[in-house]
Image (cartoon, rainbow, N blue to C red; front, side, top):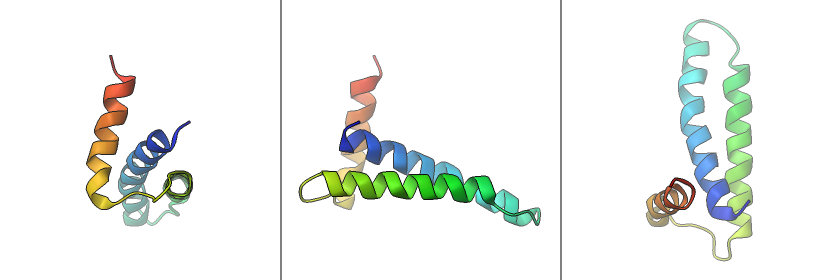
Length: 74
């Protein structure tokens, strides 16, 4: 897995974990699954930043996601 793919997957998982966490909190449940997914997403993002020399900037993130989509979708 290259750093761009890990960054894109980490960002998508991070975004998808927020509704799960908010739903669990609003229903007075522990947000176990959402928190676990958020931790996994954070780990993937940190790994991607550590693997790319110079890291990522916020301006690069849309291009990274679009490049990953273009690379893996026919």
